Length: 482
Ligand SMILES: Cc1ncc(COP(=O)(O)O)c(C=O)c1O
Image (cartoon, rainbow, N blue to C red; front, side):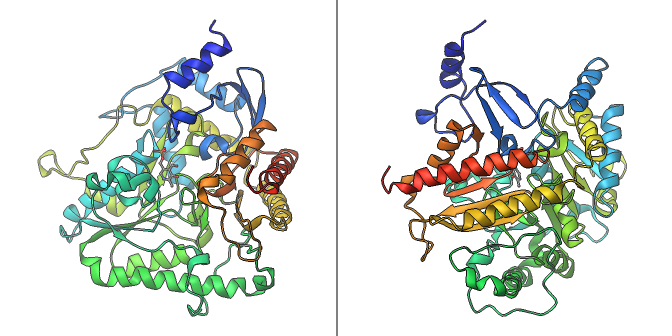
């Protein structure tokens, strides 16, 4: 058996970690997990405050999901999706079609979120060549500011986070870039339009702790912001719709952008605009799907049925690599025809629809039902909200915001102005280092601290995460130059 020191060395030297500066990487090697706790090779325990990068739903090592994977393993571990399938992938496809919004009943499986987005982009592109009234000039995409849809070159092209993607620009295709619909960035005089505001019941709106007196005006400000951003999108659509195949959006919350929460009504407005201008809508719910925002899918909150729904991460409960692109009859039928029509979608991955991963997916949906996961969320959402309200009072917290079981906050040296700390000080990163030392694993997004625990987190677990976070913030902001 290798010693913990060996493992740390191998992890540090041989394993090149994702999105990690290896020159400063301090090995954290997990040996096992239980519920929402990760346990490292030295036996230290950490509450998983970021759901193992936004994918764990019901907790780790869940007996129901483990048993389903084991049972599948005794039957068949893998068979291809090229020209055949498994009983398990067929079953999961049906379960997804049953719970997806509207008429999204055709499911294309892949193994990671980036691929699910690539598939939607390619389907949309090919659709316009093969639909009843072909429009082959529709070859472009509209994507939002600071979008994140993955790291493969197609998904990176529609993404727009400079620090991740700017270097690769020469390799990426051009997209029409919309705004980042962050209500905090809307011009102050954007005018509200009555009837636009569609606040979902379980939404805690953006709390601007630096200007609490403005809280009462939040709804109308959000409504005005919504109208403003939709106006920007319409401007793009008006002049480019004839060449646009699809618009791609992360519904409700742009997670990688720093948990940016769209103004209520924005998604619904996008659906209306894409219909008006005959452009397909791709909803990338890879991060927000499976209950994160309080409903099974974020699209449900604004009664939106997209043309494509991309799922990943929580699709297998966060257990195994699995992603899916769902679409409707209209798109699906455009790909049907005899062999010589060339209508086939020439795309696939070796492990598309892998039965082990699909077994985990089915078991995860079973757990949603058996444990009433969604019905039990409101109490947790409420508790997170109480904690965020308390943290908003901290002298070095500038803003807090929340959607469902996703919370976020920014630090400031000056509560009055809300200005950020200089990026070079890496305050958010230091806070996470302090929480780790106190048994809570969090990972910042640049200057943003966020919380996205597994939906299975208990109220006690939430209290611990938030208590430790507050302690760590105190520590890292107390001393100006620590
Ligand atoms: C919204 C969104 N889309 C796509 C992806 C890419 O998924 P994956 O990392 O599985 O390729 C992510 C990953 O964080 C995401 O948040």
